[in-house]
Amino acid sequence: STDNPFNPLYAIFIAVWSIMVRAGWERLETTYQYQWGTVDYEEPEQDRTEFVQNVKTYKRLNYISQKEEFYPDPLWRYIFVFAGFLAVCALIAVNILLVLLIEAGKSQIQEFLGLEHAAGMVPKVLG
Image (cartoon, one colour):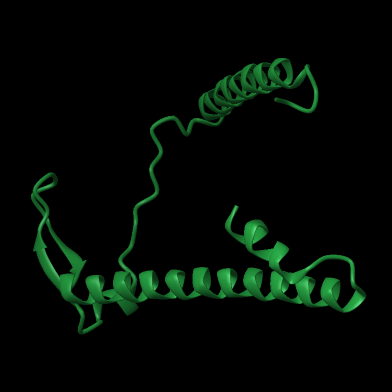
């Protein structure tokens, strides 16, 4: 159930409005590109010296452009991805711990004030 019967209508309006704004923005962008003469303009990219001179970087052939390009070492890439995964898992664990601590604190306050028995906390946390 929804709080307001007009929520589906509002959702449809927002979906249509966002599509229209994006189409209008793309039209305006191409108009400005044509007026300013930047339709085929592409700024050349330079390799960063910190990346090129890094020990964890090596050259390999790009299959599409057939040019040699710098790539990060796959071992270090996997190490950094795993470290990021561990960081996200740690933050999720901290979040769950904080929620459980808040619920335990609420039950302690309710028990102290005599409003509700502490056993009422279990269905709230699990359900």
